[in-house]
Image 1: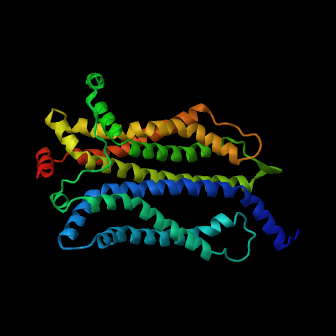
Image 2 (image 1 turned 120 degrees about the vertical axis):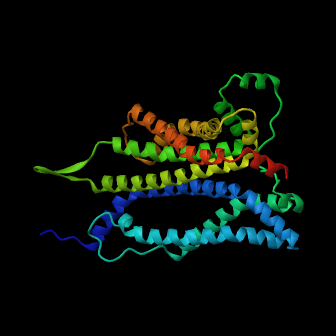
Image 3 (image 1 turned 30 degrees about the vertical axis):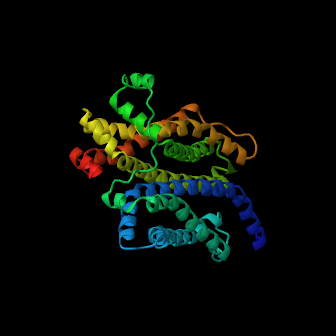
Amino acid sequence: MTLHTWQFKADQDAVILKTSRPILVVGSWLLSFLAVTGVAALAAGRAFERTRRAGLLKAVGATPGLIAAVLLTEYLALALLADALGLTVARLAGPAIASPTAGRIGDVAGPAGATVAATTVLAVAVAALATVPPTLRALRTATGTALAGTAPAGTARRPRHRPRLTALSALLPTPLLLGLRLTARRPGRALLHACSTAATLIAIVALLTLYAQPVKGYGLGSSTLPDLRDVHDRRLLLAVTVLLLALATVNTITLTWTTAMEARRTMAIARTLGATPGQISAGLSTAQLLAALPGAVAGVPLGVGVYRLLSAGERITPPVSWMFAAALAILLATAALATLPARVAARRSVAQTLSAETA
């Protein structure tokens, strides 16, 4: 019988958890970025409703401070609810992360008071920063314009008339032409979508790089005991990647729906000029695909670089075919996820859309 002190077991757990900290730190930053992207997309998608609500409050005599408080309260309440849910999940998932071996006696302590305060402040700050710009646009909109529902989106740039570019674009297929137009008129949102795609692909490529490394174990005669540190790191990185994919899925659907709502007048005019609902839907999907393409290209080398930066020693780079397949899968998933909200938006009546814009 071999006996070990609890200090020895704690030191062994610390050795295993040492390589897990970079995964948690980098993964938390990537998840935070995708969360900010999602909140910003949701806030932009509800800009029309917020503008109309601000017009109604102005009509009954509400002050700008009261209107801003009403518009921000709903997002702050959701942020606090999400913060409480996240802390609860973290408390439940803590033992699986902090106890890589079965030698720990007793329960794992939950998030400390400083951690709870930091996450709460961060959640409130994210909700406030993402909703302040559309709230200010709603407050600056005239009461009559807001009540009539003709307020401009505020995120689209007016296209400049360039004869040569217009003649060249006439040769493009209709879906590609519409997708390029939507992307060019919203460069900030396209950049945000590209960064979101790159963040997701960074985690995927890092996971592929980790799985490409040789499996280490301890030979015990006819059996082999796996290295607990490698097993723990792989499971943890897999969990972070799954969470990133879930957030990226929600963001893609939200960004497509937001773009469709903001560009409904442009799409209605395109249909009056002969574009079919299928071409409109394909154009909206193409816009998301064009925005995700630079992120997919940049995400592959960034994922390999981040993994090498945070790992020690020589590391084996996964096959190029694996990384190419991951980037292609991300692009195909983006196009597929954008199809459903694009089709729903493309089925809206042209007469209803144009009459609402000119009412």
